Amino acid sequence: AAKLHASQLQPPLLLTPSSPDHPDAYRDRSTVCAIPSRGMIHVHVVDALLLLIWPMNHTRGYVFASGFEVGVAYNQMIQAILESPVYSKYSYIFTLEDDQIPSPHTFLALLETIEEARTDDGKPYDAVSALYCTKDGRKTPLVLGDHRMWMPTWKWDFSPVPPASWDLPVFPALGIPMGCAVWRTQLFRDIPSPWFETTTGGVHAKLASWHGGRGQGKK
Image 1 (spheres, helix red, strand yellow):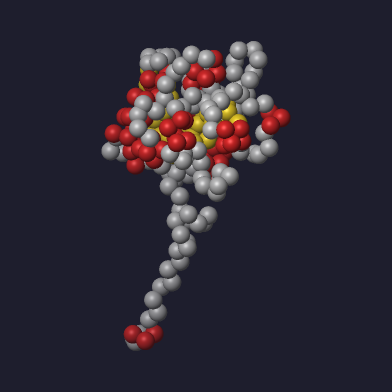
Image 2 (tube, rainbow, N blue to C red):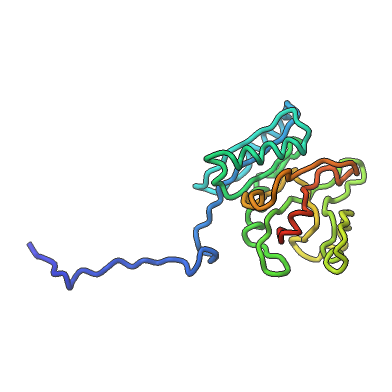
């Protein structure tokens, strides 16, 4: 039998991305889906949840909170996720309320946005939300607070931004609704609890406490 000499053995080639942030690098898309509910979830919502398309070969989990006020429910679920030895290691949290019926591609679209989109200073977003409207008959789009007005004045104004002002596919806002949104898990480690609160004021009733987030460079 022929024998190979050491000089004939070549080391294998090892190809790696230039950095972990390179577009071709592996991305951990593990996600916890957090769903608050008053106890009974409509069959159409369950059907939409079952039809959601998730990234292949990435883990996901679910956390439900039943019977709590919505702000309390979110705080309870986020705290449980951060304290979990498993879920605390997941990259993203997908908040979905039980009155939303997302299309099958909704989560993938939000995931692509939070991974690819960049702020005006070139940084990735910490949270992104699907666009949906109020159910009060006026159907006001929940894009809350024009970031272009906030930057020169530093005044918090969560008034809905009219569609005519949207000049980007991903429009930066001072406040986003929580009913169908993706958040980086690290965001909730960087900002102290409570993360959510319900206040009076119509469409402002379910805003994340973004004052602390913006103050720490979160977007």
